[in-house]
Image (tube, rainbow, N blue to C red; front, top):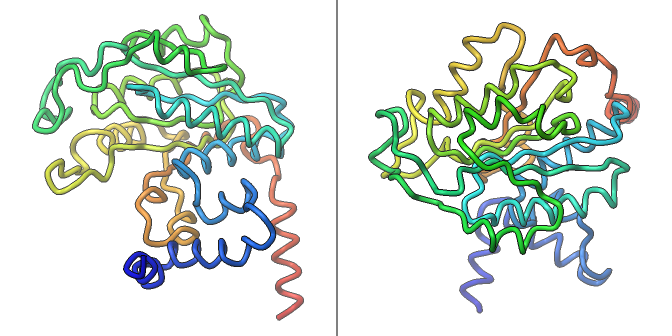
Length: 280
């Protein structure tokens, strides 16, 4: 016990901050969802952040309903977690949220070439037990098939609410590239800024993610081929949650030609800045 406590007290800032906040708040009872989100003390905090921020933007722009998409569901733990976060977020913000999970069900297909990193992934990895998963899900709609095909028919088949968040866990360059074709539709199908999480852009010292394969290459090519639609890093996050990996995996898709891209949403933040300047 002494070793664990010592490690927590001497670990990087986020763990120390989490411990301190818990100690401060314990006398008040369990911390709220928003308190835990603020310090990243949640299961899959990247899902929590992206879903909450998408709903917040929708609320600021008076969208009554949005959609969240997970690409690459595997066993379904991500979808189960996303449902949990959605249930918490809709208690805080008056926005209804739909959830869609794209998956092949049969696991990874054969890698097409080196860009799909066959040195790390093999055919059949991350297959889905669809029947078992559907028993655990409450409101998620599964979209089964190759993303190249399902993205082409998704809006016709499901008519989803505008998309505010996309969570990518497709592993391959080819699948990520194909999934990003979903964006090539009328702007009304998306919020003007969409929170995007990429699971497979950091890896480890065997995987060795790089800019010329996998999801990183798919992002680079999307930006190269789209002049007014860009996927950019969320530069604020690593400063808010220092010494953690997931803030470096959160991006924002910007559609600069979206009819609502320039709608003002900064009233609260600008008010805070004005008050801070007065205090100085």
